[in-house]
Image 1 (cartoon, one colour):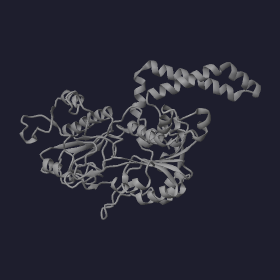
Image 2 (tube, rainbow, N blue to C red):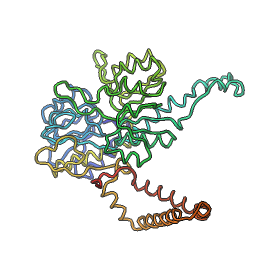
Image 3 (cartoon, one colour):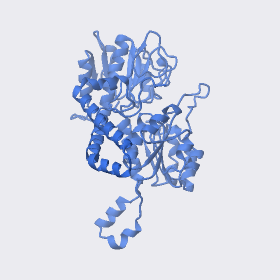
Image 4 (cartoon, rainbow, N blue to C red):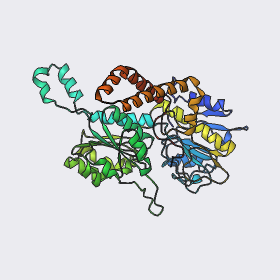
Length: 461
């Protein structure tokens, strides 16, 4: 994984180093380290951000020299061996292809595959909003700036030529209710947009409880949508063909369903969108703007380009100014998120090595290991029983929640029992100020505690 440069120009891994050393391990920084020459006992972490091609990776780790691996966006090839397991910093594990755990799905391997879900959810969701705001509202800032500073704009005469529309009230289809999809929906809601979320039926009550619309299919969610944001993951791979279940899912049917001139944002996996169908939809106006973030690889010797983003490159010339292509950067460029993810990954791999306990497992649990509850980021994802019970550790917080809850209960009970509209009006006038203070304080405190979203324990019957 890459980190922002430090004073010496090299990736600043100092925070991760301290975390490793506090765990009683040794940290080695730099590509000059030769793992085979590391002596002594204990657990050694070797930081190798220079390993980025399959050939280099296999040459370094194809024979089991390393016991485990932690990676972010770099592809860990199938022909690498890590007998103690691997952790992907982030949610998806498609790049973690080592045969030690059975490939990116973690199916059938002898070593555990783990991830760190939620680490980059907020960073990715914010980048989705950045992409949306690049296109909408479609006020041409650069042109207006250039004309203004060159003295070629008169507000009274020229402003009428630049109509635009606000985001408020626009429908956004969010395909997927994972950590990133939910964060996108929350940000869109803050802008006054109307999120409609496609997810499995079991998520419906939680989606609707947060005030979002629910759709049973991607096409239903996209019907009349002004914006479509994709957060589904590739799904399972078909063994005979290697094709992922969700590959090409965003195609003609969805493009036919959206509001004419819609915006598509796919900051998930490039394969999720049918690039040919997108080309056609942008050509006939069904999709006005599109932003795609996906892996792209360039052969150092020949310059040949490959990867999930490659099929989109021919579209750039035909749709200049309306198609934004990014090299799978939005989830992996936030330094604090990378550091937090690295620390969590260190903890997870140590727990697997030392105690044979696996949290945030992806795929099958290998023999000899015990699955334990995964780690979660505060305020990201659902609320666990442990997080809910943990509130009781602060008696003052519990008293405040109980107090405001009691006051609100008293108000709504009295309002429901009021005899007529005149009595209800008088009650609201007398108690409204305190009620709204309690409502706002309660909401703010619940948010600060991370108590919002679905419950991740066993659902009630």
